[in-house]
Length: 373
Image (cartoon, rainbow, N blue to C red):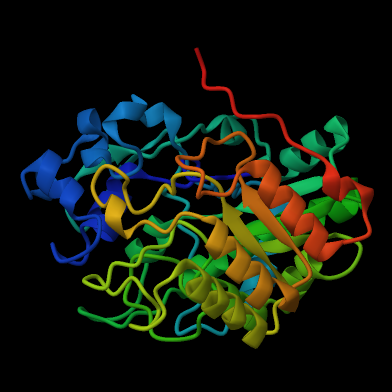
């Protein structure tokens, strides 16, 4: 449930994330290239200056969505009560029901009126989409549900603090945990054997000042304020895993993309971020990415990309993976660009032999990627 396009609100991501901190930020080049450096020139016809997907993807607003807030749902209201009772942030929870998918919304800061991406069918039918997702998982007979929450725009729009920072992002911690709790309530009532996992940001457990632009510390705050949610996903019968997206990282020191100036290689960054999860007492799994990373843009900043090469995998497997009980990778059917990059089969076999060396499955292979005709 979720994923990049189903978390990206092009207007707010442009206005408050990509363009919210001035031109000296990593992705501001999109506003300069496609909007002449003026955020007002970023409109729906150019996908608000192509901040969610590049022009080559031929996306429309219908290709994006946000996580809705099903106000009419009784289990959603139970989740809201749970979040409100446990809130320890610098302000109490505020759930922005005015941001309803497929409805007009006026940004009070800019007076611009835009359509919120996504479908409002759940609201028109008085349904809870999180409950319905549990029903769908049960009907399909799948092992579990993965909550892939990446609403960067939400954190930047509702941040607390004066410019130029640092800021706090409690409202995004609240929203994420309300969604997780709604899913948990419905799993327990409808399909108690279902597992629940989450795709967590690489910087999600790093407990230091947040200067905007990502979901830094959302999971460490979640563990402090709502440990039951995190433990449901990471411990016990329903644990699908806290899957850390330790990829799409950059070594660009100009924009302070490395956690420290001397921690810029892929394996060093993976080790740093996974140690942050361990320090936050969160049982987490390492994420591996095959092929060309999505970030930084391969068209704009290929030099600062950190693909998973043979040597980087060796270093991660040797140094970091032994400290953690699991790993995952994205994605199986994705091309590599050179023989130096790790293939899906190589990664699957290496990870399997590291985590479960006696398993006969570790000699298995995955089909080769075939480009679409």
